[in-house]
Image: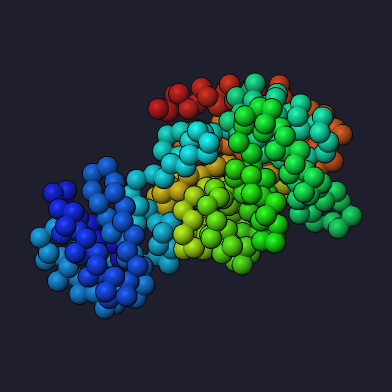
Length: 333
Protein backbone atom coordinates (compact mmCIF):
# COMPACT_ATOMS: atom_id res chain seq x y z
CA UNK A 1 0.00 0.00 0.00
CA UNK A 2 1.17 3.55 -0.70
CA UNK A 3 -0.03 6.77 0.88
CA UNK A 4 0.43 9.79 -1.38
CA UNK A 5 0.78 13.05 0.52
CA UNK A 6 -0.26 16.50 -0.62
CA UNK A 7 2.48 18.90 -1.72
CA UNK A 8 1.75 21.28 1.15
CA UNK A 9 1.92 18.66 3.91
CA UNK A 10 3.83 19.78 6.99
CA UNK A 11 6.76 17.78 8.38
CA UNK A 12 5.13 17.55 11.82
CA UNK A 13 1.91 16.13 10.33
CA UNK A 14 3.86 13.70 8.19
CA UNK A 15 5.86 12.45 11.16
CA UNK A 16 2.70 11.98 13.22
CA UNK A 17 1.18 9.89 10.42
CA UNK A 18 4.34 7.79 10.10
CA UNK A 19 4.41 7.13 13.85
CA UNK A 20 0.75 6.12 13.81
CA UNK A 21 1.32 3.69 10.91
CA UNK A 22 4.38 2.23 12.62
CA UNK A 23 2.22 1.78 15.70
CA UNK A 24 0.09 -0.59 13.62
CA UNK A 25 3.14 -2.78 13.13
CA UNK A 26 3.89 -1.58 9.62
CA UNK A 27 7.19 -0.65 8.07
CA UNK A 28 7.08 2.82 6.48
CA UNK A 29 9.37 3.66 3.57
CA UNK A 30 9.41 7.39 2.76
CA UNK A 31 10.07 8.44 -0.84
CA UNK A 32 10.57 12.16 -1.45
CA UNK A 33 9.93 12.63 -5.17
CA UNK A 34 10.20 15.72 -7.34
CA UNK A 35 6.49 16.47 -7.11
CA UNK A 36 5.14 14.49 -4.16
CA UNK A 37 6.02 12.48 -1.09
CA UNK A 38 4.96 8.85 -0.90
CA UNK A 39 4.80 6.62 2.15
CA UNK A 40 5.25 2.99 1.17
CA UNK A 41 3.74 0.60 3.71
CA UNK A 42 5.25 -2.84 4.26
CA UNK A 43 3.57 -5.59 6.25
CA UNK A 44 -0.04 -6.57 6.91
CA UNK A 45 -1.92 -3.53 5.59
CA UNK A 46 -5.35 -5.16 6.05
CA UNK A 47 -5.62 -3.40 9.42
CA UNK A 48 -5.39 0.05 7.77
CA UNK A 49 -8.71 1.87 7.33
CA UNK A 50 -8.19 3.31 3.83
CA UNK A 51 -11.16 5.67 4.00
CA UNK A 52 -9.97 7.08 7.31
CA UNK A 53 -6.45 7.68 5.99
CA UNK A 54 -7.82 9.25 2.80
CA UNK A 55 -9.78 11.68 4.94
CA UNK A 56 -6.67 13.09 6.60
CA UNK A 57 -5.81 16.68 5.70
CA UNK A 58 -2.33 15.89 4.38
CA UNK A 59 -3.29 12.81 2.30
CA UNK A 60 -3.88 13.09 -1.45
CA UNK A 61 -4.66 9.42 -2.12
CA UNK A 62 -4.16 5.85 -0.90
CA UNK A 63 -3.51 2.93 -3.24
CA UNK A 64 -3.06 -0.77 -2.67
CA UNK A 65 -0.19 -2.50 -4.47
CA UNK A 66 -1.39 -5.86 -5.74
CA UNK A 67 2.01 -6.99 -7.05
CA UNK A 68 4.07 -9.10 -4.62
CA UNK A 69 7.18 -6.94 -5.09
CA UNK A 70 6.91 -3.72 -3.10
CA UNK A 71 10.30 -2.00 -2.77
CA UNK A 72 11.10 -2.57 -6.44
CA UNK A 73 7.66 -1.39 -7.58
CA UNK A 74 7.35 1.87 -9.52
CA UNK A 75 4.14 2.60 -7.65
CA UNK A 76 6.24 2.58 -4.48
CA UNK A 77 8.90 4.84 -6.03
CA UNK A 78 7.60 6.79 -9.08
CA UNK A 79 10.91 8.46 -9.96
CA UNK A 80 13.72 6.50 -11.61
CA UNK A 81 16.40 5.36 -9.21
CA UNK A 82 19.85 6.72 -10.05
CA UNK A 83 22.76 4.74 -8.65
CA UNK A 84 26.10 6.48 -8.19
CA UNK A 85 29.13 4.18 -8.50
CA UNK A 86 32.17 6.26 -7.57
CA UNK A 87 30.93 9.11 -9.74
CA UNK A 88 29.49 6.93 -12.52
CA UNK A 89 25.72 7.33 -12.57
CA UNK A 90 23.39 4.59 -13.77
CA UNK A 91 19.71 5.28 -14.46
CA UNK A 92 17.56 8.38 -14.76
CA UNK A 93 18.96 9.32 -18.17
CA UNK A 94 22.59 8.45 -17.42
CA UNK A 95 23.87 5.72 -19.77
CA UNK A 96 26.76 3.45 -18.74
CA UNK A 97 29.08 1.12 -20.62
CA UNK A 98 30.37 -1.90 -18.71
CA UNK A 99 33.12 -3.67 -20.64
CA UNK A 100 35.89 -6.19 -20.15
CA UNK A 101 36.75 -9.87 -20.54
CA UNK A 102 34.52 -12.78 -19.65
CA UNK A 103 37.39 -14.19 -17.58
CA UNK A 104 40.46 -12.60 -16.07
CA UNK A 105 43.35 -14.64 -17.48
CA UNK A 106 46.57 -12.83 -16.56
CA UNK A 107 47.88 -9.50 -15.20
CA UNK A 108 48.85 -8.37 -18.70
CA UNK A 109 45.51 -9.33 -20.23
CA UNK A 110 43.24 -7.49 -17.77
CA UNK A 111 45.53 -4.44 -17.54
CA UNK A 112 45.69 -4.07 -21.33
CA UNK A 113 41.95 -4.52 -21.85
CA UNK A 114 41.12 -2.13 -18.99
CA UNK A 115 43.12 0.68 -20.61
CA UNK A 116 41.70 0.00 -24.07
CA UNK A 117 38.02 -0.14 -23.04
CA UNK A 118 38.41 3.05 -21.01
CA UNK A 119 39.88 4.81 -24.05
CA UNK A 120 36.94 3.51 -26.10
CA UNK A 121 34.33 4.93 -23.73
CA UNK A 122 33.74 2.32 -21.01
CA UNK A 123 32.65 3.75 -17.67
CA UNK A 124 32.95 0.52 -15.65
CA UNK A 125 35.31 -2.44 -15.99
CA UNK A 126 33.99 -5.99 -15.84
CA UNK A 127 36.00 -9.16 -15.43
CA UNK A 128 35.16 -12.67 -14.29
CA UNK A 129 37.16 -14.02 -11.35
CA UNK A 130 34.70 -16.74 -10.31
CA UNK A 131 33.20 -18.42 -13.38
CA UNK A 132 30.11 -20.66 -13.23
CA UNK A 133 30.58 -23.09 -16.12
CA UNK A 134 28.28 -25.79 -17.44
CA UNK A 135 31.19 -28.24 -17.64
CA UNK A 136 33.21 -28.99 -14.50
CA UNK A 137 36.25 -29.38 -16.76
CA UNK A 138 36.05 -25.86 -18.22
CA UNK A 139 38.15 -22.94 -16.91
CA UNK A 140 36.62 -21.85 -13.60
CA UNK A 141 38.40 -18.52 -13.25
CA UNK A 142 41.32 -17.25 -11.15
CA UNK A 143 39.06 -16.68 -8.12
CA UNK A 144 40.65 -14.51 -5.39
CA UNK A 145 43.76 -13.88 -7.45
CA UNK A 146 41.53 -12.66 -10.28
CA UNK A 147 39.88 -10.11 -7.99
CA UNK A 148 43.32 -8.84 -6.97
CA UNK A 149 44.24 -8.36 -10.64
CA UNK A 150 40.93 -6.58 -11.27
CA UNK A 151 41.60 -4.23 -8.34
CA UNK A 152 45.05 -3.49 -9.73
CA UNK A 153 43.47 -2.61 -13.10
CA UNK A 154 41.09 -0.32 -11.24
CA UNK A 155 44.05 1.47 -9.64
CA UNK A 156 45.66 1.99 -13.04
CA UNK A 157 42.54 3.20 -14.88
CA UNK A 158 40.24 4.62 -12.22
CA UNK A 159 37.35 2.55 -13.58
CA UNK A 160 34.93 1.11 -10.99
CA UNK A 161 34.87 -2.68 -11.26
CA UNK A 162 32.14 -5.30 -11.71
CA UNK A 163 32.61 -9.00 -11.01
CA UNK A 164 30.41 -11.99 -10.25
CA UNK A 165 29.87 -13.64 -6.88
CA UNK A 166 28.82 -17.29 -6.59
CA UNK A 167 28.69 -17.87 -2.84
CA UNK A 168 27.93 -15.66 0.15
CA UNK A 169 31.02 -17.13 1.82
CA UNK A 170 33.12 -15.22 -0.73
CA UNK A 171 31.80 -11.79 0.35
CA UNK A 172 35.00 -10.83 2.24
CA UNK A 173 36.89 -11.08 -1.06
CA UNK A 174 34.51 -8.49 -2.55
CA UNK A 175 35.16 -5.80 0.07
CA UNK A 176 36.73 -3.42 -2.48
CA UNK A 177 34.63 -4.46 -5.46
CA UNK A 178 32.31 -1.65 -6.59
CA UNK A 179 29.53 -3.71 -8.19
CA UNK A 180 28.76 -7.30 -7.22
CA UNK A 181 27.19 -9.23 -10.07
CA UNK A 182 24.69 -12.02 -9.45
CA UNK A 183 24.69 -14.28 -12.49
CA UNK A 184 21.69 -15.79 -14.24
CA UNK A 185 22.21 -19.16 -12.56
CA UNK A 186 22.11 -17.55 -9.11
CA UNK A 187 19.16 -15.21 -9.67
CA UNK A 188 17.07 -17.32 -7.32
CA UNK A 189 19.84 -18.21 -4.88
CA UNK A 190 17.82 -16.63 -2.11
CA UNK A 191 20.37 -17.10 0.67
CA UNK A 192 22.94 -15.25 -1.46
CA UNK A 193 20.42 -12.50 -2.23
CA UNK A 194 19.59 -12.10 1.46
CA UNK A 195 23.28 -11.84 2.31
CA UNK A 196 23.75 -9.13 -0.33
CA UNK A 197 20.72 -7.33 1.10
CA UNK A 198 22.66 -6.82 4.31
CA UNK A 199 25.55 -5.13 2.50
CA UNK A 200 25.92 -1.63 1.11
CA UNK A 201 27.20 -2.91 -2.24
CA UNK A 202 25.73 -2.08 -5.63
CA UNK A 203 24.29 -5.35 -6.98
CA UNK A 204 23.90 -6.08 -10.68
CA UNK A 205 21.21 -8.77 -10.86
CA UNK A 206 20.98 -10.81 -14.05
CA UNK A 207 17.73 -12.36 -15.24
CA UNK A 208 17.62 -16.15 -15.10
CA UNK A 209 17.61 -18.14 -18.33
CA UNK A 210 13.96 -19.14 -17.93
CA UNK A 211 12.72 -16.51 -15.49
CA UNK A 212 9.75 -14.18 -15.87
CA UNK A 213 10.06 -10.45 -15.27
CA UNK A 214 8.09 -10.79 -12.05
CA UNK A 215 10.48 -13.47 -10.84
CA UNK A 216 13.40 -11.14 -11.62
CA UNK A 217 11.75 -8.35 -9.61
CA UNK A 218 11.02 -10.71 -6.73
CA UNK A 219 14.73 -11.58 -6.62
CA UNK A 220 15.50 -7.85 -6.51
CA UNK A 221 12.95 -7.62 -3.70
CA UNK A 222 14.96 -10.13 -1.64
CA UNK A 223 17.95 -7.78 -1.78
CA UNK A 224 15.95 -4.64 -1.14
CA UNK A 225 13.96 -6.17 1.71
CA UNK A 226 17.26 -6.55 3.55
CA UNK A 227 17.86 -2.80 3.34
CA UNK A 228 20.08 -2.60 0.25
CA UNK A 229 18.31 -0.58 -2.44
CA UNK A 230 21.31 -0.35 -4.79
CA UNK A 231 20.11 -2.83 -7.38
CA UNK A 232 20.64 -2.74 -11.15
CA UNK A 233 18.70 -5.21 -13.30
CA UNK A 234 20.29 -6.94 -16.27
CA UNK A 235 18.52 -8.59 -19.22
CA UNK A 236 20.98 -11.12 -20.69
CA UNK A 237 18.76 -13.19 -22.94
CA UNK A 238 16.36 -16.01 -22.15
CA UNK A 239 16.14 -19.61 -23.30
CA UNK A 240 13.65 -20.20 -26.11
CA UNK A 241 13.23 -22.81 -28.85
CA UNK A 242 15.50 -20.77 -31.17
CA UNK A 243 18.95 -22.31 -31.72
CA UNK A 244 20.50 -19.81 -34.15
CA UNK A 245 21.66 -17.68 -31.21
CA UNK A 246 22.91 -18.66 -27.78
CA UNK A 247 19.83 -17.13 -26.14
CA UNK A 248 17.01 -14.81 -27.23
CA UNK A 249 17.45 -11.17 -26.22
CA UNK A 250 14.12 -9.97 -24.82
CA UNK A 251 14.14 -6.30 -25.86
CA UNK A 252 10.48 -5.97 -24.87
CA UNK A 253 11.65 -6.46 -21.29
CA UNK A 254 13.10 -2.94 -21.30
CA UNK A 255 9.88 -0.89 -21.70
CA UNK A 256 7.94 -3.49 -19.72
CA UNK A 257 10.33 -3.29 -16.77
CA UNK A 258 10.34 0.51 -17.03
CA UNK A 259 6.60 0.43 -16.34
CA UNK A 260 6.96 -2.07 -13.50
CA UNK A 261 10.00 -0.80 -11.59
CA UNK A 262 12.12 2.26 -10.86
CA UNK A 263 15.39 0.29 -10.92
CA UNK A 264 17.96 0.85 -13.71
CA UNK A 265 18.09 -1.72 -16.53
CA UNK A 266 21.30 -2.81 -18.27
CA UNK A 267 21.43 -5.07 -21.34
CA UNK A 268 24.03 -7.77 -22.00
CA UNK A 269 23.97 -8.41 -25.77
CA UNK A 270 27.09 -10.60 -25.56
CA UNK A 271 25.51 -13.45 -23.57
CA UNK A 272 22.15 -12.87 -25.21
CA UNK A 273 23.36 -13.70 -28.70
CA UNK A 274 26.66 -15.50 -28.22
CA UNK A 275 27.82 -14.11 -31.56
CA UNK A 276 30.19 -11.14 -31.76
CA UNK A 277 28.74 -9.69 -34.99
CA UNK A 278 25.28 -9.46 -33.41
CA UNK A 279 26.42 -7.44 -30.40
CA UNK A 280 26.45 -4.08 -32.19
CA UNK A 281 22.89 -4.18 -33.64
CA UNK A 282 21.48 -5.52 -30.38
CA UNK A 283 23.32 -2.85 -28.38
CA UNK A 284 21.89 -0.11 -30.58
CA UNK A 285 18.41 -1.62 -30.39
CA UNK A 286 18.65 -1.81 -26.58
CA UNK A 287 19.59 1.88 -26.39
CA UNK A 288 16.66 2.77 -28.66
CA UNK A 289 14.31 0.75 -26.42
CA UNK A 290 15.32 2.80 -23.38
CA UNK A 291 18.02 0.78 -21.61
CA UNK A 292 20.19 2.52 -19.01
CA UNK A 293 23.41 0.85 -20.08
CA UNK A 294 25.20 -2.02 -21.77
CA UNK A 295 27.43 -4.81 -20.52
CA UNK A 296 29.73 -6.02 -23.30
CA UNK A 297 32.47 -8.64 -23.30
CA UNK A 298 35.76 -7.38 -24.73
CA UNK A 299 38.95 -9.37 -25.26
CA UNK A 300 42.21 -8.34 -26.90
CA UNK A 301 42.46 -11.75 -28.60
CA UNK A 302 39.00 -13.38 -28.77
CA UNK A 303 40.25 -16.41 -30.73
CA UNK A 304 42.44 -17.44 -27.78
CA UNK A 305 40.06 -16.42 -24.97
CA UNK A 306 39.65 -19.05 -22.23
CA UNK A 307 35.93 -18.29 -22.01
CA UNK A 308 33.26 -17.06 -24.46
CA UNK A 309 35.62 -16.01 -27.24
CA UNK A 310 32.96 -16.23 -30.02
CA UNK A 311 30.87 -13.51 -28.40
CA UNK A 312 33.72 -11.20 -27.36
CA UNK A 313 34.54 -8.00 -29.22
CA UNK A 314 37.99 -6.61 -29.88
CA UNK A 315 38.68 -3.20 -28.30
CA UNK A 316 38.32 -1.55 -31.74
CA UNK A 317 34.96 -3.24 -32.31
CA UNK A 318 33.82 -2.11 -28.86
CA UNK A 319 34.83 1.48 -29.66
CA UNK A 320 32.65 1.28 -32.78
CA UNK A 321 29.69 0.02 -30.71
CA UNK A 322 30.08 2.93 -28.29
CA UNK A 323 30.26 5.44 -31.13
CA UNK A 324 27.15 4.10 -32.89
CA UNK A 325 25.16 3.59 -29.69
CA UNK A 326 25.89 7.14 -28.55
CA UNK A 327 24.30 8.38 -31.78
CA UNK A 328 21.13 6.45 -30.93
CA UNK A 329 21.10 7.88 -27.41
CA UNK A 330 21.43 11.44 -28.73
CA UNK A 331 18.71 10.84 -31.32
CA UNK A 332 16.10 9.72 -28.79
CA UNK A 333 16.75 12.41 -26.20
